[in-house]
Image 1 (tube, rainbow, N blue to C red):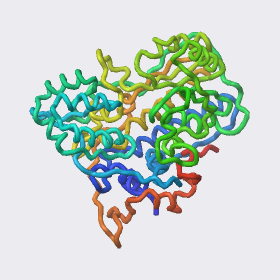
Image 2: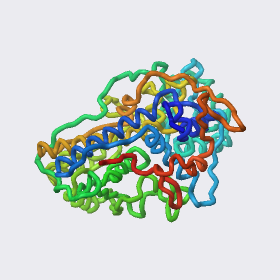
Image 3: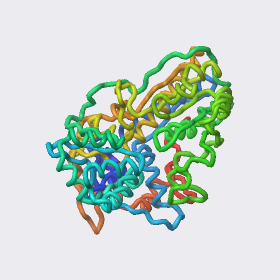
Image 4: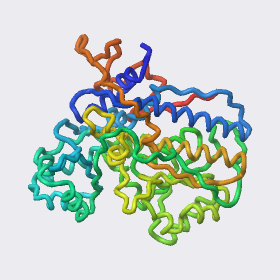
Length: 465
C-alpha cells in the first residue's frame, strides 16, 4: 500500500503511536513533521552529493522519502521496542505537563537533576511522596514520550500566581517558561548562521564509496541533538571520532541493553570511533586540540560559554586546524537571553510556538526539536564543508533547538480521523495505524529501510547514483 500523504506516513511509521503515548492512543502531530524532516534529509543528500562531486566523484542523483524520514525520527523508540533485552519499557498516560498557575498561565518546567526537582516542589509545599513519585516519569519523558505525574503536583501549581512560581523556580535553580498560545516563533532566526574562520584548506580527494568518505569529524556531544548530527555525517560516509569522558558516556548503560550497550545510545552512535578524554584537565584539552588538528569538522553541543572558558572556541581551534568547520548545536542561539533557561526540547517547543500547533497546546513528548536540531546542525556542517571545498575558507556554524523549530512548518493540521476495522485502527483510506513498533519492524514494506541486528534501526535514508 502506498503512503499517500503525511497522515498516512505518521500512521504507518510509528509517529502517531509515539506522539500519542502521553494521551493513551495514537494521535497525529499538529504539524507535517515527517515531511519537514524529509526536506532536511533531501538537503543533506544534495549537499553531500555536491561535496563529493567537488572532490572528484560522479554523483548524478540522490533520493530519500518521507517514510524514511519518519522512521529516522522514531529510531530510538524502534530500537527500544525491538531489543533482545528482556527489560520492559514503562510508560503510561495520565496527568501531564504543561502545568498551570493560579492566574491561568500554562508553563513548562525543566531540570536535569533530582535536587532541583525536589527543591522546587518543596517551595510549593508538595508532599514528599508525590515529589518522589513524579521524578521518574518526569526524568524519563525524553525516552518514553510519556509523563504521567501525580495529579497532586499539577493541582499544587494552580495554588500560586505565576510570579511566585517563577520565584520558586529561581530559588530551586530550575527553568520555567510559559507555553505560548501563538504557533509562530516570537523571534525569527535563520536555521544556521555562518562566520568565516581564519586559515584555509580543502578535503582530501574523494576515493570512492559514500559521499563523505575521507572526511573526518570530531564530535563531543551528549543526549540526542549533538549525537544525531554526528550520526547523519557518519551515515554519509564521514569518519566520526566521538570524544567521551573517562569511563564512557553514561548513556551507554541506560536500559534496555542491545548487545553490550544501550539500544537508545546505539541508534545514534554505532559506527563512530570512540576516544575517552578528560576535558576537565589541561592535558585533556590539549589532547582534543591534537585530535582536531587532523579533522575537517568539530561538532559540540556544550553549554553556552564552555568552549570559550576552556580555550576550545572556534577561533582557537581554527588556529590549530586552519580551514576547520566548527559547529555548535545549542539550545537557544542566537536569541539574546540575558539569563538563558535550560536549552531542552520541551522548553523550546513551549517558547517557539510549536506546542501551540497541538489541539491541547502541549509540547509533544516525541522530542521534535532534538531530532530536527541534530539534522539542521548536520546540514550546516555539510554546507560549510561544501563552501570550504569551493573557497578554502573554514567557518563557525551555529544552530540550535530554537532555530531548528523554525524549520518545522506552522500550518496546524487537523486531527486525523481514526477508524476501527477488523480489530485494527486505520485511517479512512485504509492505512493501518501502527500501535506496536515490533509489528512495524516486521512489516515487509519497510524491509529495505530497516537494519536488523540485536535491535532494529533505520538504514541510511538516502540513495545516491
